Image 1: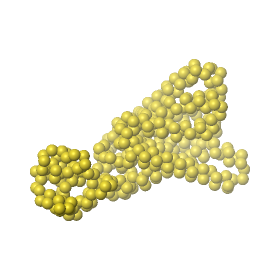
Image 2: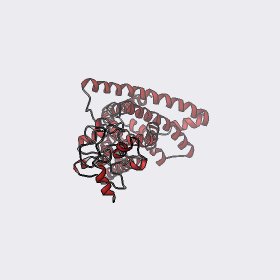
Image 3: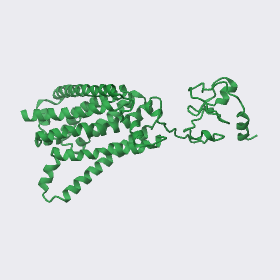
Image 4: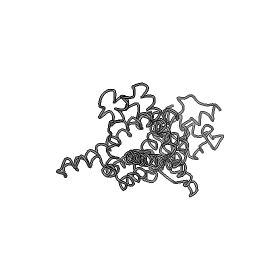
Length: 366
């Protein structure tokens, strides 16, 4: 007797329950069903032996589009379960993309964003004949404002990728899967998320300032006062940008930080990267690894223009821990808000805006 005949014989068994005894999913009322459509457990085995089958008798069947078929044909390669619109609002127990896709897609988005940014700079240079004016514009806040729109790639790339996990891959459903949605929030809940985001932005500024102050003291003890004064006297891109800024450019830059930077970076790093890593590495490691990647990407400029070895080490230590701290804060907030990005995006954007405004005030006072 071959395997198909065994399947036909077992199909006549009447189940003792309407729902899967393992995961609680309702058993479809169709002929020849053997395995649970959600957890993949062998229902025929449990029905006959009244106990759990071995692991080899548990199969992950993937999507449920085949419920109208007379039989489920199993393959050695597990099929990907595609999410319905109802499941999008409760993703806590849903298996999504793994670590390789999480890191790979994030890296691809970052590389593509920088490629496009460089391309924009090259085009600008080709259409400008005064090199000195070009260099001045490239470090001005107005260029940063224009270039910030390139970060929309941070939304585009993961949004394109996650479509394969959806039964109905509309733009709205892709954004819901990434956490960029207000679906399920009434006016009161929406205001609550906004206030939480504003409160954590202020907390983030206080946290980063405290850690920066503490790192300054520690590094001063390790390397000495004179070396640290040389480090503080080193002009960076932010210093050059603030030096050429006026009130209008600071205002526009603050708006861009809230509407573009905070939104795009959180969709990529929290809505996509952390969401995938948490499911493959666990919550704690998922949040920590996301924070490490977020911090490393923001410190690439230090590696591209390191200066002297000592200044490079000091700059790396001085900047890493504040970035790591704010990223951990954003990751924990994202986890607390059940993977919705409203509060997290506001925290990130407003934090960046406050930082720029404070730097502008301090620079002009000094």
